[in-house]
Length: 99
Length: 198
Image 1 (cartoon, rainbow over the protein chains, first blue to last red):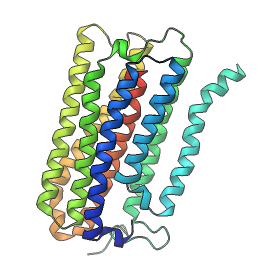
Image 2 (image 1 turned 45 degrees about the horizontal axis):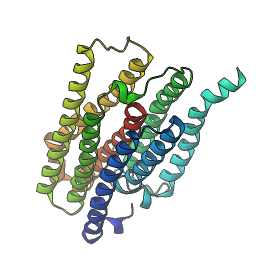
Image 3 (image 1 turned 90 degrees about the vertical axis):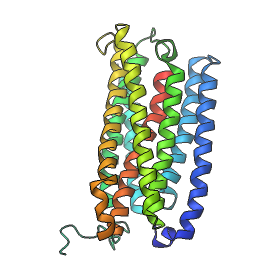
């Protein structure tokens, strides 16, 4: 974050955002638990659970971890990591396909 | 004072961030790959077993839901602890940091209760693949919580002396500890549905 983003006025604005994110995270937690009680077919349940978790994770990363206003070097490093992370999750399927 | 490590309070002219922040992010990146490997293992195990049970038939969903809310709340108090320092309110920092530590301990207490209930019913990491990966993932995550408690307790008590000496550096340390803490929260946000709800 830049120095301007650290001024007390800017921080006070941030705090309002933190509270809004907090409420959103709470609501999404209740939503994902409620959906699990519907006992959807597995692939639908996975899709909903991962979608909600991704939104929650995105909110935490963007606002609590300040990625929304972070320097490019950090976001670029994370894009690179994301690529390897996704690759790591796809590897098992590739292995099955080859086998 | 001679600076042993440079650019720990001022951003490095090349990267635009302090070396401390770059350092904590590189550490978190290695952590992403650590948990990524274990998530990948979970996918392999689950995909390879058509009889794999739904998490909710084995695990206590209401308890884990409460724990999820506890951890999310601790993330908010952690970011408020940093924001308090950024606004020059040291007393508010102490309140929020103390609250963060208490919530972390509450999370660990619930986790210990869950583990205790599993052990009582004779479910151990060696019981089957489900419990094997469940205890591995949640155990590693609980160790991360414990590590966060240690660092945050240091920052609340002896480490906070730095505030008078070098407030910028202290605020940076709390920010770095916060980034770690939000990461641990983020891991749980994915662990909870994966293990309990699917």
